[in-house]
Length: 285
Image (tube, rainbow, N blue to C red; front, side, top):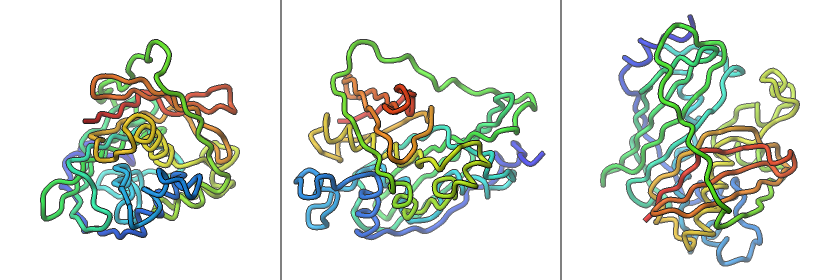
């Protein structure tokens, strides 16, 4: 079997040295839709180096290398076809505000392999630290079609209850036609997001937006509307990717306030409010 769960779990962490500069942060922010309107002071926090604030989700692309989904496929015990892989969920914990430029050592390891019957679910954990200590911890949940059924642990359910009552804020967010082409310059060159023929191999009629792009757009919406634009208040952000987004669509972001936590649901307006992100929470100070 191409997926060897025992070998993947037993493999030692894989470390790497990464670095980033201000221009990388600016490109990431533009890739998730910052800069509209271009002269808005709130948007200039993301697009002008003299007043730059780093959205914590930049951690998912820092260093410009392949995303966690791709890195997981090169881990020992994992030998599967990229066309059968989907990013199922993502969580991020930031241990302190991210600098606009810097370097860090990252450590990747598979911390869980679950048997979902018709598929396997891998969890790749990435930890990053610099000379001052830990910076962030990311967990990428990776769904691999056709690799389940060996009788392994199904794992915990990641599905929470739907929020009740009307949302505290609702925001419409437009996805630009070229947004996937711009976002892929941050490191994720998977042709699923640009090549119609490859998208068809994965079962889609056209390229789809990167899940982590939608993730960043959503976190920005929460920061801008409920956290007074203060990126340093974010402590963590977790989500389940429930559906795809097509470039050119409009997203509806609904937010419910809690005690130190915002619950979020994202849907595609143009497809009858089809769910895009569910079980999404942002914890904050």
